[in-house]
Length: 355
Image 1 (tube, rainbow, N blue to C red):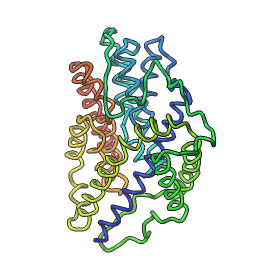
Image 2 (image 1 turned 90 degrees about the horizontal axis):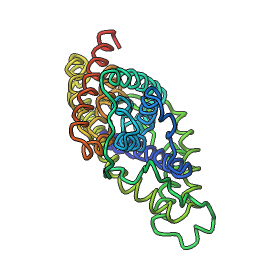
Image 3 (image 1 turned 180 degrees about the vertical axis):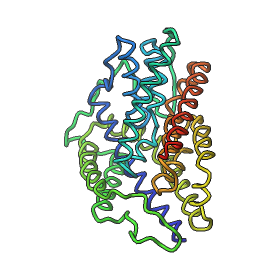
């Protein structure tokens, strides 16, 4: 049962860190009135750069903004491709929680590949203007490119009077998480166990950084307006993401912990990297945040090389492509086909280069 509790502990830590990051991003998006990355609209190169930049923003805020701008005819198809390649959905948060240094390096590589592929695509594809549509998705309401949230967060300690049960639940949850981080309650034993357990959190300083971020989140959860706390933090972040991230993380960790415990998963994986790159590319076609966590977790545990993680991250884009599927089936199919092709080329190129 030890690996079950290890997986559970890691899943709780990952989910807590991801939710804290999502709340921070929600705060930045609302206080900047939804203007995150709205510049650079006027040149084709600028559009592709903007697409890459929106994709690199963790989660689906930037992705949804990119699809919205594309469907309003503001971004070119190449910019859309750049956004989808650079985007790795909610997995971006999980990677920042598990291996922050390597995650930032990966995002840089994704941005460069996304912009290069976007510029190439735009050389061959004329600019199209799209009709305006409304679209919905898993992060619906996170980002509206035209209307920032006029209500803002309106910080005031008076907002604590008559606090809603949602605000109280959030405050208690965040405070408990800060205490658990500070006391190291979510960390594993560091000596390897007989079952071949691996420790995915190799950068301990990150917990201190997150403890400080969590204090800031605690503050704006305490003083933010009811609209911000209930509408944004609770409805956008907690209701839509918390359970899903926890279940996917726990599932991926459990599968790998059990694989390490009962089989020689390491030998099985290491002998079949070309096949695993292909799997990563194909699974990346699913427009959902979650299935890709298996590759993130294997990379964190040292089971797969960077080439597999890169192929997975290029191919997948979390929920960013869901509104695109609602908007334009052909746009979705073409963009995902380019994604998969670039993912396969990059993954195999790095693999043969020994990375």
